[in-house]
Amino acid sequence: MPDDAPNSWESRADAYSLYGFTDLPTIRDRGAVVLTHGEGPYIFDVHGRKYLDANSGLWNMVAGFDHAGLREAAQAQYDRFPGYHAFFGRMADVTVALSERLVEVSPFSRGRVFYTNSGSEANDTLVKMLWFLARAEGQPERRKILTRVNGYHGVTVVAASMTGKPYNGLFGLPLEGFLHLTCPHYWREGAGGESEAEFVARLARELEEVIAREGADTIAAFVAEPVMGAGGAIPPPEDYFRTIAPILKRHGIPLVADEVICGFGRTGEVWGSETYGFLPDAIIASKAMTAGYFPMGAVILGPELSDRLQAASEAVEEFPHGFTGSGHPVGSAIALKAIDVILNGGLLENVRRLTPRFEAGLADLAQHANIGEARSKGLMGALEAVADKATKTPFAPDLSVSERIANTCTDHGLICRPLGQSIVLCPPFIMSDAQMDEMFEKLGAALSAVFAEVA
Ligand SMILES: *Cc1c(COP(=O)(O)O)cnc(C)c1O
View 1 (cartoon, rainbow, N blue to C red):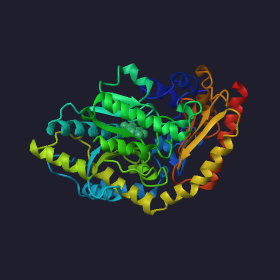
View 2: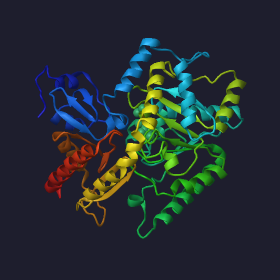
View 3: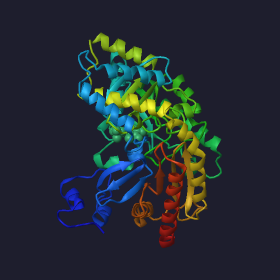
View 4: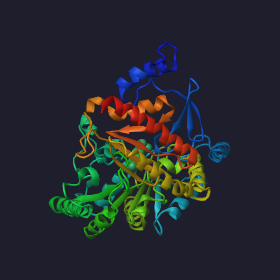
């Protein structure tokens, strides 16, 4: 029951705040969870209740909620130079250092970085770069962007158009020229009797057909998350990217990896594109780049796009784009520290060490009669609930099964995320074995309780 006294935190949240991506009837019944602080992977609410956050905040708080090194890096930079922009050829020294570091840890031999405040803005920036480039190079018709159904690329108008989710129809989106290909989810999208290899071949044929139909020279890029995140933690078949990357290359269409979730270690390598063995032409980064301690995003261009953008910009004097907060010195200092903590402070190693335990925990819960699929890559994964395992029939949407599972978890001190009929898990990189066991124990109990009610 929500605390509905007029001066309660819950009532005040409700009276004055608009919630994004929030099931409003649930909030009416249960009240918002109003938080005060965190410790390691745990968060605490205004009533002193403690929750293990199995989603790293929103995929991003990979170093936990009280990392001393990140707080000190922020404080030191606030003391030294608390804010500046990156326009007119001026840029903070730490931002210069961060770009150098990002290119160094990128899969590119060289390249350049453009900063934003979010992943959505980074995707919008990328598309503006490509449109700008196309016009500068005498190909103004090269504007279409290919993404996939269930791909998530953000919420600004272009990023939402890239996102392959039905709710964007509520805004009259996508914009014209944003095309969504089949989601590479074999378990759900594979046709009866089709092998995984045949499924990949079918998606490759679809890509060829779309390119032939639309015309290769009207397509500005193919943008994809290595593992789909907000679509439901969906890893593609192992050969998917190795199959489609050469097709794009043959047609001269840039392949952009939206690494906003996968980047900086989530899949067990620094980049998800590394995990799947393909080299993109550009990378979109955000989320774990600052371990969630500052809002910051980046477009990292590989050598070819970087050279072409530089030349096109010089021809008209400038690339007329940027945000007041682009390359913020405090964000830059935090990102430098976060990259160091992840790569040299044992976090990436811990992702690799924990992955088998994570896979085993998911596989164990997948024994349940109402779990149709357990899927994961590195430390991102999902359990998909089904009414009937053999036929993969989902539960009736009005049962709100995944919401009920997540709410039951919340009641028992575990935060996990319902997405469609799935429960998504993406634990912070700092988790201990005991904390991971706690996560699966609480989730297992919630699954049993909810399935006993609905199945
Ligand atoms: C979160 C996300 C974005 C959008 O980032 P925001 O900072 O929320 O704008 C873009 N792409 C992917 C893959 C994401 O997960």
